Image (cartoon, rainbow, N blue to C red):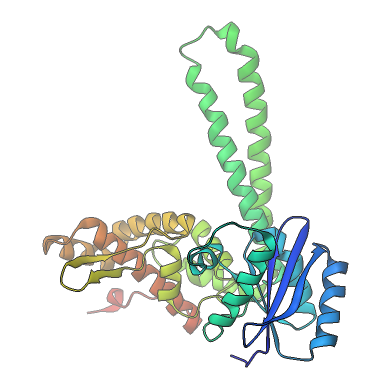
Length: 333
């Protein structure tokens, strides 16, 4: 980590950015400013900051999704170090606070950067393929949800007269047809994007070589890891997914069992659960492991969670080796 001299906090909203900067002594170095959330305004502002400060600068802002995309793009273009910080982490670090304003939030983000400067992880922009894939995957999820909702319209079919439902059913069938057509187009586009980038395509095939891991899980793993550049090891991703167990004990009065935390990517956790169930059914090693641990008296869900972690470890192993998964027991005498 560099020795930064100026710590700039940005409170991001849809239309504006509140900006404030402090130095190593927690003194205000850059007074509070409000600018438009646009490329030209952001670029103009930070060019002035670079010119006036002539110091090592780091910028921090909450990960607000699409609203922070322009900030990240400009900072990346100007070669300014920045970190997109989890909103929950910022709010937990504030301690007791009364009241709230964008100006105060910007200052508190700058103070967070200062107090956590030795463990801040710098952010990078995902390559265009990953960004486009993420948008398509999100759109796919919305379409699947809509299809499920419209299918529920048919639950009334056997309980109401046909003449009442005739027009409704006709309309629902038409909507479902369009949704399914769009779903096919999106899935084809996702497949095409994967094939266009050789690195992504290779990693995609390597992930699918792990027993229990299917196409959708492989795509989602590529997205959340930014093609395996955002996480260094399986334990970090397991923590992010909410499948890594942590101790729960304090002194002599609290001595609970290790358990996972509710702070998690619920989508990834759900996908890993399906992978674990599939692997437990078709992978001999994991099936044997599951049965052995259950026979020993271990809780089934605990063992299943261990299998989720084993799957992530296998995924990282094939990515690091750049070789498909091989079940050595198949070749054992």
